[in-house]
Image (cartoon, rainbow, N blue to C red; front, side, top):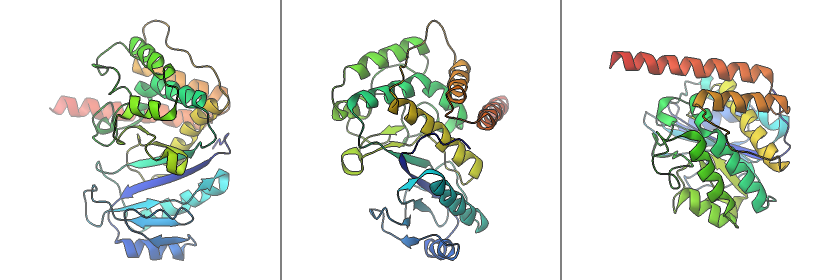
Length: 287
């Protein structure tokens, strides 16, 4: 595991299969400081177990972390995932895994850098998610392109990205950037709705999961993108034609090259992309 950012972060796991009071008890027994909370609970000093009406399945719940940092935070995440798995918790298509990165000190140039980075590589990160989380397929995780580029799903990737870069560069405040990407909503792969209250950018793209490998890899990947925006590393558009596979390969290769991702995580993600595509092809053949 490569963790090359010292920024704070927080995670939210949606799942089902365990009564919330039972889950709180099991977490406490494992040494996790957890408590039952309401849907609007905002005590980010403890792990909160909340109700979530959007989840399909018996005993739906959401587990929200306190503010985490570094390797110690990762160990807490691993322990929570293990408790959920060991007690019958699971995730389905109605569930998501969200991560918040603390960026209160960012200036608008950092936000523009990060959003341009995401816009350049979203077609690649889509390949790391099931079909239900790609493009605009999920109501709760709309593409960053949706409000800006009509027809982005079938359009030329390089041209779409260049349009996004131009629009993003025109934003002079965080509010302008939020309005450009989200309009008045918050159900986007990148969400700034809570920034002025929590100082975080929320990444909502990932499907629900309690797999340690999937969760830690996603923290590693998104953390590397945050780190690049921290450093102000220049981000350029695509030169010529490009497909989604090349987008993903470029993202993973660059992350390893600059030390933001381990080679093991890149290998895992390449295998995951192939397996997800195999499932999609099988479903298509059966249809």
